[in-house]
Length: 171
Length: 112
Image 1 (cartoon, one colour):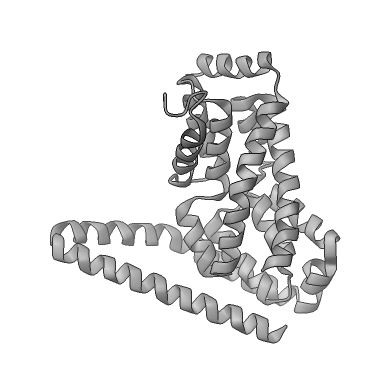
Image 2 (cartoon, rainbow over the protein chains, first blue to last red):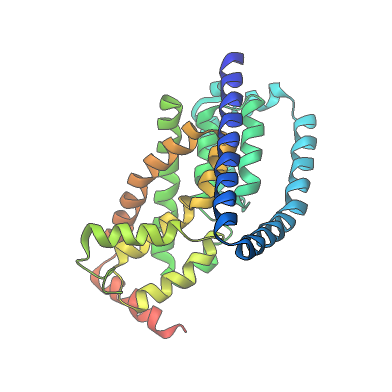
């Protein structure tokens, strides 16, 4: 268990380094083509960083608090690999109801994963979070009508359970 | 929109997918765009593929997912979703009768 988590952490770090290398290479190429446009791009990047920062730092705080209250044992009991289909179902329901943007949800999911949650359960949470929207049902009904909305969300929910089980087997 | 209409086949579906994946913003941002697509005569299957791609295969979010949950997690999920999006679109389209499908198009016309 411990080794698997360590290996995963190593993967994140490597991928992050890869992203940085790509970004820096792109920046260098852009700078050699046009200094002015590169400056503009950097300004835009800083702006979106400023936009994300308050939300993201708040999320990190909440994750910190949550992990203090919920210790590894209770997370493992609720959403751990041994919680089985009940845990998957619970995670899928939570994901369906909540409306959190991805850049908030992924760090949260990663934190849960490294404090004892199972891959299946986290996959169910991530999948329903993105595909099923209980809060946005009224908006969806306005566009597509009741039937489409219910069928789409229902199918997406069932599919998320399938994805979760498949991910539990593969990852 | 002739690229996304009925009989646009695999190319239409791929284009609808690319449209959704290139988008940014929460899922409810996709609904107004879907209305416009219906208004312009895109096939319902392609509209639902677009919504599916928007919901779960947005490119910026995929890189973020990979960096926080790992490439293996994000990649596997994306691969499964390619099938899932098509299956869900097919299921939704076939859950509707001809009249209901026509009703959707008519509804899109009325909305601005």
